[in-house]
Amino acid sequence: MKIDCPCCGGEIDARHTESMSTTLRRMYFVCDECGYRTPAALEILFSLSASARPREGVVLEVRPSPMLRGSVNARTTMQLERTV
Ligand SMILES: [Zn+2]
Picture 1 (tube, rainbow, N blue to C red):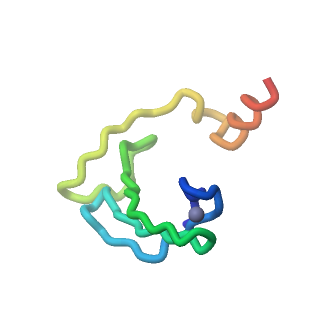
Picture 2 (picture 1 turned 45 degrees about the vertical axis):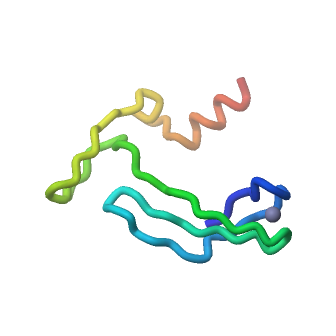
């Protein structure tokens, strides 16, 4: 996974990840351009649809998005928003 370096604007790459819980992962990023190193977090916030195979003890609220229903998906919704 790559993101923009907050210091120089280059790309920083996740070199190592560490599981903190079933929904939270810590990632360690390194920038080859400026030498910056930082930890960041990736967290599952909630569900857009329920899992067909829910794991016992993991509760993720289902918050369906009206923009993702029917024949319109996230990709086409984003394209529509850009052209409006
Ligand atoms: Zn950098």
